[in-house]
Length: 113
Image (tube, rainbow, N blue to C red; front, side, top):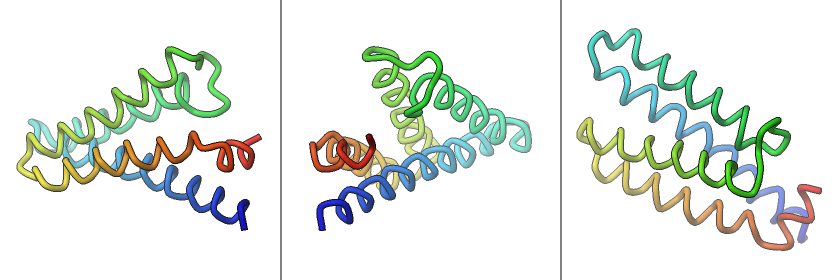
């Protein structure tokens, strides 16, 4: 039962990461030219995540990992707000905080290791 809950939380963390990248793509697509900025913002988020925030990041650490997570989720939420999706931006921010806090629980961390 505990491992099921742990894997469920980790699945929601992954969904949160995908939603953040999609939100950055959407927010960037409202710039000029939209066909360029959407993919560029998403690619920058993926590059930063891969380098600093992923579990196997080469440069992750006790400071870099949470900082990059805050930057990615914060900018994704802010981007949604800036393009007119205030409620969606707030919902993404709240979901990100709650699910990433849940991922720090001992029963979830035990599944990760």
